[in-house]
Image (cartoon, rainbow, N blue to C red; front, side):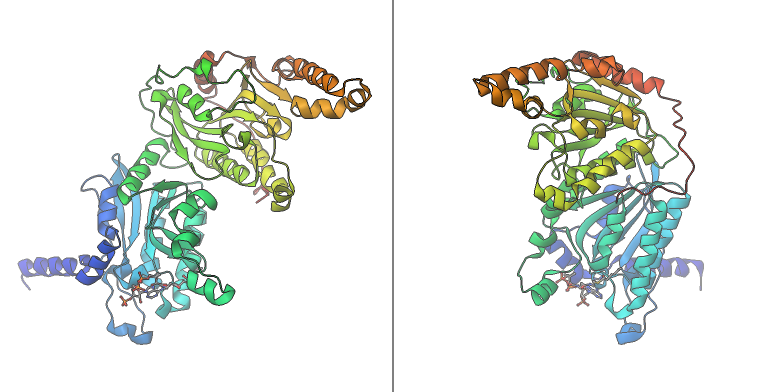
Length: 514
Ligand code: HXC
């Protein structure tokens, strides 16, 4: 065959596969408000940077008349590209081809790109839009999932793994995203569940829609499975590239340093803490006064909102923020916020991102519900993660730091490198009211006017302990500083932590309270 014809043949073959599941299936995809798998990839990576592999891979199933069926690219598109000119690996399941179902060759395409990303130390982006295990391929498709989960685990803490849920992600398929670092969901498009509404109806007799069972809002606000929520696919892609602008490409490289810009000068850090210690405020206002250009990228914004986590830059370098949020439940720690904080600390630690902790909390949330939900086990995760983290750790106590909350939130005792406190800090075993009621109970009961005595004792306790100076006198905090001094103090603390070597004992691995 002449060369010209061979090229024509290649072009024809390519075109055929690139049509995916065909016109009708693509129309259905569009009618559902979804982009095609190819459009999704090209919307995320740098223009013209996508290089596809394994376009001509075909499934090898024979049962259920599968030998008569050709599936374009076996329902998944894989390749490499760049974002900000830096290399990434990416795959997108193509729902127009057999519902994006995962057979053994489909899985092999994914695991091949996973192996590449791990070897070449670049982030992996996986776009999920699939009916799950390809039913006709039986155990071979289950084996494919197992191979993916194994690689997700190997790559964990080595390269960033990003999952984008842009369609159904059902059954065991949800466990690959659950093993990755960040999960992105889009309103009305994303669906994640172990057992679908039909199974729930037949087993439990309960009716529920896919949306209410495992839609984007459910996973962003209730389960915490998703880290980023978007209204549209386009917004989701912008969030992905924004995340990648903050994090390093692997666990050896540092995040790209950029020219620092000062925080917005209209924000007044000295005026954020209210006069009345019982009044709430938004801790994100403090963060915005500290980070370059007041640019803070929040993670898991809608879940466990009594804690705020996210990325920013200080002096041009990426840092991770872990904060109590006085606006929600007074910033207490509970099961969910403990999980949220602990996992984020581990992410930052794995990827050499210094951790800045902002403390203002009355402690762990009391109550039967929390105790029975395992607040002891969940709360311990924070202690474990801070103690284990060897990246630079800077802690700032803004106001309340009571009881276990004081210890847990990046205290000196869990090896914070620098601990600062504002003059508004109150560091004590518990709040003045509770403390006075317990230790002065006899005096209060015996007093002629118990209420007056109670107030007097509360005041006494406040003067003695509800300040930062007792902790400062023991060296548990390094400096009491004015709010406007904070940014320069933190920049300096990070600068002098450049060569930190925490020297942890050798072990295979510890046993965090999972
Ligand atoms: C083979 C599948 C498939 C699957 C969908 N298709 N899921 N083919 N295996 N798992 C095919 C359909 O037959 C159809 O093919 C095409 O994809 C589009 O599917 P529709 O049903 O027409 O689409 P829609 O109405 O949008 O419904 C989407 C859906 C539904 C909700 C995802 O297809 C569905 O419930 N699928 C089965 C989901 C499931 O139970 N998967 C197994 C989970 S168990 P045609 O040729 O008609 O266009 C699992 C175990 C993993 O995944 C364990 C790992 C540890």
